[in-house]
Amino acid sequence: MFVSAQNSAPCFKDFTLVMPAVAVGNVGQLAVDLMVSTLNMSRVGYMHTDCIIPMAGNNPYATCKEDVEELHTPAEVYTAAELKLAVLQIRAPIIQTKSKKFRQLLVSWIKASGFTRTVVLSSSHAYQRDDQQLQGTPLRYVVTPSLLKGSVDALKELGWRELERVAPFPGLTDANTEPRLYIPGGGITKGLYTDSCAEDLPLAVLLLFCSEGDNIPDAFTLVNHLNDWLHLLDTPSQKPNQWKIPTSWSLLFGSGIPPALF
Amino acid sequence: MATFFGEVLSVCSRAVEEDDEDLLEENEEDEQIRRELEEKREVHLHWSPEVSDSLKSGSKLQCSDFILAVGHNAARFLSVHVLTSANWDAVGHASVWNERSRAATGQTSEECVFYRQKDNPSVLICQVTCYVAEDQLFQWTEKVFDCLQHRELNVTVLSDSTVAEYKTADYVSCSSAPFLRSLHSGAFTGQPVCQSLEQPNIVTGLSAAVLNHCEVHRIAAVVYQCYSDVIGLDSVTMETYKPALTKLGKSIQLDPSPSTDVLRKFVRNTNIQSNLYI
Image 1 (cartoon, one colour):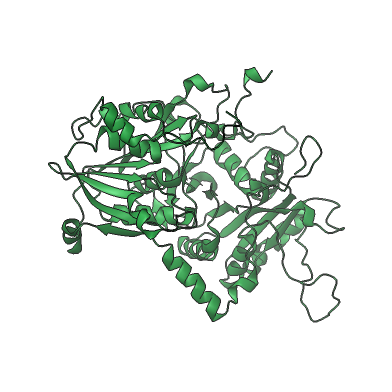
Image 2 (tube, rainbow over the protein chains, first blue to last red):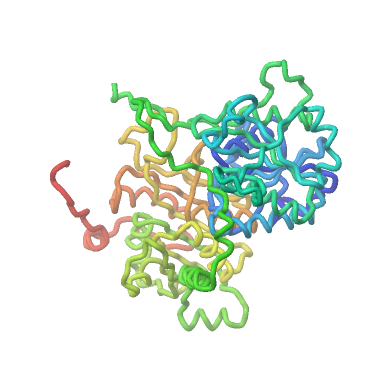
């Protein structure tokens, strides 16, 4: 599944992997775009798989004329070696009948590559929040037991809210039913989390409650939230925005308006 | 999502709903139906006996140029300007069944055909006019490229698209369509005959699947996407592809001005469904 873009395979040992889930508002993917664009990450390989719908385009992070005509595929891996950070960007929906296969491929790749931890950036339908969740921060996290061991203090210090578990049958007061994890609109997030627990992988999910629309502000919220933990950018949060918007974000709502309309 | 006028529209969400766990506990009958459907959706390549023989021993087809036409205008362009000469043999076809296929089984063989040049068998052409579903794109590409040897292979894809899908800051007026835009893999060293596809436009479908494959396997490939404002067959749109093939002049004999008889044979008039809104 992973094909190196260089002549030798890159080494991911001791790296942190950040990846998005294709979820409501595409917030995780937008956040990852900001990371690759700002940190000037370089592409080290492709995820070549039949699980993702094919698409192709020129360099979405082009900054000058020279690097514009570089082909990019729907799933690619970028690294920033000095930060020991690797990022998997997914640009197309995962084929529904292949989502389980995709999760399995991901889990095996993560295990084989030796990442110290994986962070999944995701989102969930804002309209599914219960009364309690309507108040306060829209950000939540979930971690696998394997990652919890090493990060309990860090998470406590950050003051993050863990995603609440829900009753499997709301309204029924049957005490036998265990509350379960529920991430509506999160794509493969829940499945990936469950698989990682089963495989004892250190994985954290950072998600945001949001709705479809202009999700650029949501992307900034999520990436700043991640930055509070991983310290990817040195600037403190009070300073104005330091994240660079890539050129591929232009015309998100369509072409220019025909003058004949007026 | 609420619109400007206050009505609430159900938006087709870009998100995929999480897997319903109950789906995993299918009974045997459901399993079997699912498996049968998957088998039916498999892409199958049918080659002529000559080609099958050369592929049987595990070797691949010698191929220096592979030209793929995706869409009716691209396919008809090749039919009119290239394939009319007696120099081409039909050597195979692909059968692709999905929810948009027409019921009659006999018709699928016309929708994805492979041709090889008689006096230069290393040039292969493929015309695809059928709909290849999202879950079949990767499979089609892998199966076709598995038959071709990759060394020094050059791939050219002609692909139809509509100008409605083209995003630009300045409004594209009707007079500028149809026009070409190109995308090429990292291994492509030539000079495309038109402008490169600007951000934030992307290519999807079979052309994207082929480009992805070529990029990952370091095969030289270029896609020429034609943006047209006409839905259906149109001779002006077809002519737009000419510059893309003149580049291949050495390998392919291009008939620059086909006779009107030939044109008439291939360009059907679009049926007028209703005169009410001309």
